[in-house]
Amino acid sequence: MNLLSDNKGSTESWFKGLHWLFALSLCGCAVGPDFEQPKALAPPSWSASPIRSNPAFTQLPSRVVTGPMDATWWRAFNDPVLTSLEERAAKANLSLRTAALRLTQSRAQRGIAAADQFPLLRGNASYTRAKPSEKGVFSIMSSLLGGGSTASAASGAGLGAAANGTGIGVIAAPAANIKPFNLWQYGFDASWELDLWGRVRREVESADASVEASGEAQRDLLISVMAEVARDYIELRRVQRLLTLTRENAVLAQESLTLTEQRAESGLVNDLEVAEARTQLANIQAQIPQLDQQSAQAVNQLGLLLDEPPRALQTELTAPRPVPPVPPRVPIGLPSELARRRPDIRQAEAQLHAATADIGVAVADFYPRITLSGSVGMQALQFKDLGNWAARQYALGPSITLPIFEGGRLKATLELREAQQQEAAIVYHNTVLLAWHEVDNALTAYADEQRRNDALNQSVQSSRQTLDLARRRYRAGISNFLPVLDAQRTLLQAEQDYANSTSTLAADLVALYKALGGGWQSPEDGARADQPPR
Picture 1: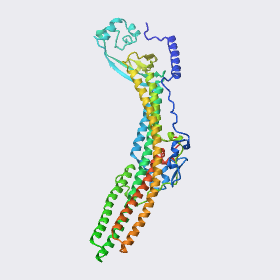
Picture 2 (picture 1 turned 180 degrees about the vertical axis):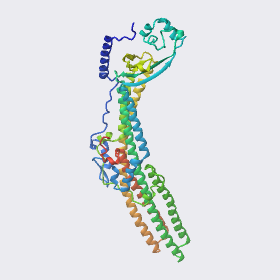
Picture 3 (picture 1 turned 180 degrees about the horizontal axis):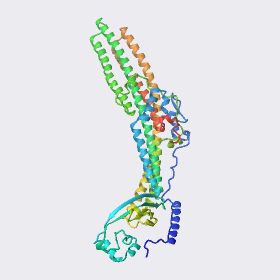
Picture 4 (picture 1 turned 90 degrees about the vertical axis):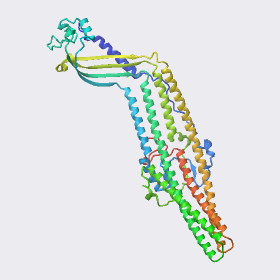
């Protein structure tokens, strides 16, 4: 009897069954819920939004208007130094480079998940020198097969070699005379799990959504970095402006001290007024080192964002420049675009998509798994026989795995995935709601700071007139030095408040751009912020 004889009819039937399994795998369903994009929570226009009543939409020196946003919003400040810093930060910032690597990792994870869609094919080759145990399982097999039988019987079993002169005699010889033998083989192994219930497809769907979420997280970080560069730059110019004002006031205080000392020498004033003038000058001068420290810190903070060592930007940024002025018109796009423009909302949506697909994976685990496995190759006791067609061997067949009892693991996993999906839905809703609050708060702050800035500007003008009048009255001997001291303090405070307000106004505009989701393309793209990411 030939134990390895082929059954042609059975093989053909098996291949027909395999054909139908392939077709069923390709047409199989994907269990679990399908993701549906959340409905927009924003009105189509600002006129239909409660935010339209925000004072930022009224007639102000710089008011918001409906219009397309530019991703490179920092160019609206018309400051070439700021523009250069933003472009360099987009390329050199370490946090952005880290986020890019996280995106690369997500794409690699997607590739790992997608690999399960395809058959697994491996090549193999081996050589074995073996001697079966004379007291082990082989001795039982030898006796069952007739250990003292002829070489032809052993040859018919495909294991004997006494008849062909090899001298091995694996089965033909009695167990006590078993000799070592060689076994050469090579071939290919293949396996493929049929995705009948869409488990792998759901895994790939979840991985795709995770890649999208990582991409949106990178864009969200880009917005934050761009905004941080602008804020730190504005802070640097604010401190430089305060330094200039403080030094100018120190000059005025020095002039007042000199005048008071001259009048004291003439006996027109007493030593108390001289001491008061000297104290005023010292107080003003004491502010300069602190402002110098703040300036150095602002420069270093910008250097950190640009991946530069400490003080590397000192020469470039030492020359004082004014705080970047805000533009007269600020386009903010349409409210209906906000959800598609803000990366954090898009990230939350992608995470909701991934969580929904994960439910399908958990549901598919309740169903049977069918795997097709096979191997084909050559096997021989002598190396020279590996090229002989008679040395061929193959094995083909399906296997099925059906979950029967797993202690509640599958049910608990499904409950976990459903709870995670519900959590992701709440996170998405909260992210959208938070975005609207951020936009409204940013608009309010921008409008209110403009009114405050205008009032502080008038205060500075009045304080200068008051100081000029007090100095003239003091020189004329009409009043003592106390009104001059008060006027100097008032002017210095008014100028500092106005400088702080000017920088706050610029920072509020940066916050508004950030709240609107502007600047999530890299500067070299030159694309609009409301366009989809590339």
